Length: 236
Image 1: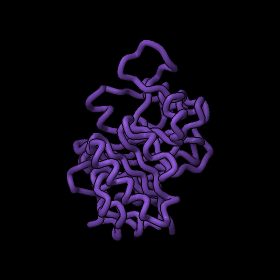
Image 2: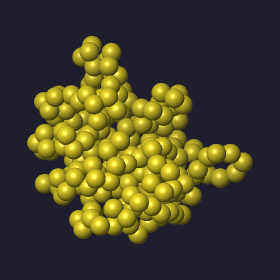
Image 3: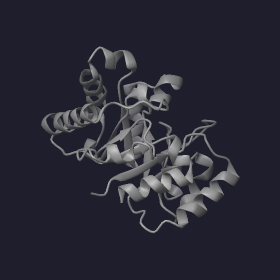
Image 4: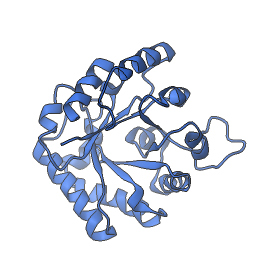
């Protein structure tokens, strides 16, 4: 079963790294299931190489907003996706559900697929309230966006991102199944749900045993071409 491979390259690479990385991507034959999310600076370089998207978006259409990038600008360079609500944006930029809803609506207005990130922190995980947390994160957004069925959801336990730690397969399966069931029963559509959180060549075989996971949102390994190639081949 082919699984989606979404690579969030965060702020890992500079221009030379990106050009070398793209050469490596060009050497991969089967990559229709792959989407890359580079820094804004390098979005255009991926056009014609692989599907790609942005890591964030402004709530504004255009105007005097220094440092911001609009959905229409993202669309204009050929991007099809944008990540919204990553835990690092929530943590470092205090992004809340109201702001994330505005971002998602801007993306939908421009026919860009939002990849909406949800997940619990370590304290919440240890308290056993993961499902309460993710359902709350889903509820505000799904109830207030114009077309929620267009979203892709990425479940990323915050405590697993960049730590090398991952939940057990049973925990991941149970959470993914619960998310899909919750969305289907309350909002009446079937949703693609990705898993993210220290996905790497070391655990991809084990993670691929979870049939309910539709794909992965990958961090560090998505900026290392040899590691990403391995994951892409395993998911084809």
